[in-house]
Amino acid sequence: MNAFSDTAAVKAAESNTPDLAAIKTRQRAAWASGDYAVVGTTLQIVGESLAEALDLRAGQRVLDVAAGNGNASLAAARRWCEVSSTDYVPALLARGRERAVAEGFANIEFLEADVEALPFDDAGFDAVVSTFGCMFAPNPPRVAAELLRVCRRGGKIGLANWTPDGFVGQLFKTIGRHVPPPAGLQSPALWGTRERLAELFGAQAAEIRIEPRQFVMRYRSPEHWLEVFGNYYGPVLKAFAALDVAKQPALTEDLLALIARFNRADDGTMVAPSDYLEVVITRS
Image (cartoon, rainbow, N blue to C red):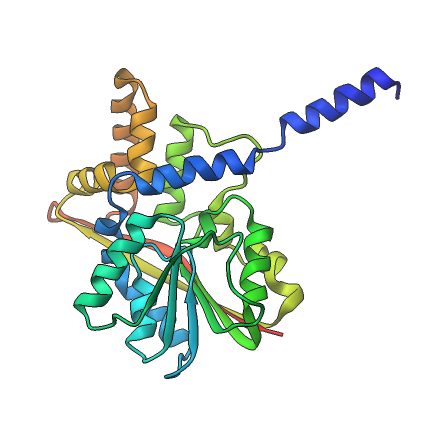
C-alpha cells in the first residue's frame, strides 16, 4: 500500500469513528429537555425489584449512576442503605432530591457526575446500580470499567436494561428510521443482551445473574402516551424537533403503529409490556 492509500485509509477510519464527546453533549441536552421525571416516576417498581434482586442490606454503601430522578436511589434508601445518587443532568438530580426530602430521606447524597468518569475512590461501594441509565452512555467499555472500579470485591452491580426486541428497544429503532443515530455508535439496547453483558463484565465477574422482566406501560390511550413522551421524554421530544414539520406525521404514525403491536388493552387504553433484563453481577 502506498503513502496515498495509507492516508486515505486513515481518513476513512477516522470518518467512521464517532465523536463521543460531541455525542455525549447532545445526549445530555436531550435528557435535560422536557422533564424525564414525569416518565421516570412511573418506573419506580423497577428500582424496587432491582433492590430485592441485589438483596440490599441496611448500612451498605450504594451508588446509583445515571440515576435520573432517583428510582433506584429511593429503593435503596427505603432499605436503610447509605446512598449516593448521581447523574449528569442537574435538573434530574433536583427532582430526585425533592422526592427524597418528601419521603424523609434527606440524607441521600445527590451529586452531579458522569458515569464514564465517576468521582469516587476504587472499591468504595457495596453495590452500584443503574435503572435504564448507564446503558445510554456512548462509551460502554468505559462505563463498565467505572462500575467495576468503584464496586468492592464481592460487591454487586445491579442493572435494569431495555432489550432490543422489547417495546422501548423497538421505540429507539423506530426513531432511528426517521432520525438516524450518529455513525459508528452502537445501539444502547445491546446492554439488554446476554452477549454484551458478558463482553463488558465477564472478565471481572464471579457471577452474572440475568432475569428477563417486563415493565408494563399503562397510559390513558396510545395518544396519551405519545403526548407524554413527546413532551417530556427527551429522545422522543428531540426526534420530533429534529424533523421538518411535514415529516413529523410519519413519525407519529410509526409510533402509533408500534404501540398497536405491543398494546394488549382492548378498552382504548394502553397496556404495553416492555421487556428488560434485570442483571446482578457479583464482582470478583
